[in-house]
Length: 245
Image (cartoon, rainbow, N blue to C red; front, side, top):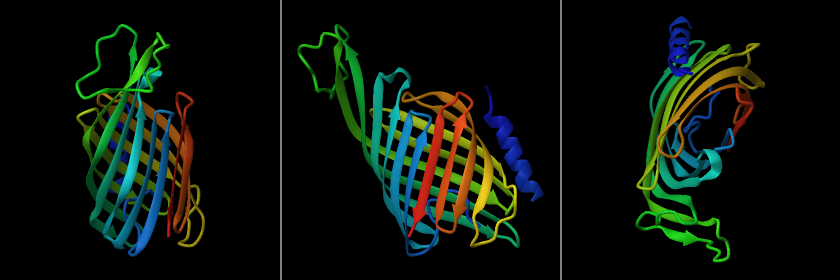
C-alpha cells in the first residue's frame, strides 16, 4: 500500500491554498517539554527538552523498537539538540522547519533459538537459563545517533506535516517517514481547546522494522498541553502526548 506519495500531494496542496498544534521539539523560550509516544505496539519513545531560546532546545530521550514476531528488541538512549531553522508567522497561519540531531548508546536483544549459530561478535547472553532448551536472549551494544527534520503548516482549520526521523547504530537501523493532514471542526482561539482530526501515513524502513501504516487520529491541545490518540487500519493503538512548563 503506497500511502506516502498520496499524502505528500495532499499536504502540498493544503500549503498552497491556505498557532502550535504539533509536538514540536522547540515551543517556548525558557521552557521544559516532556514528550511520550506509543506507536502500534512496536514503538515507544520518551524525551525531555529544555529550550533556553524559542529557536533552540536540548535534552535526552529513549526509543524502543520491537521487531514483528518479538524476535528482537531494540533501544537507543540519546542526547539531542533541536533547532528551529525557519518560521513564517502569517496573519492567520504559521509554518515551521525544524532539524535535530544527537548521539547515544544503542542496544538490541536477539532471541537465539537452541542450536542456532553463535550471536554476532560483541554479543553476550542475557538471562541465559541453562535449563531452557528453547534458546536464550543475546545482547549487542554499540554507539548510535538520532537525526531528523520536520516541516509543518497550520491555520485554525487546517494542519499539514512532513517529518523524517532516523535512529542508527551498529546494532540496528530505523528510519520513519511521516505525512499528516488534519482538519479542525471549528476555529479555536489562543486560550481555548483546539481539536483536529488527523489522517496520518507512516513508513518505517531499516533492519529493526519495515512497515507502512495508515491511522486516523484525534488531536486535542490547549496552550502548553497536547494529546493525540487513534487507531491504525489494522486496529492498533497510536497515542502521544506533550506537556510544556
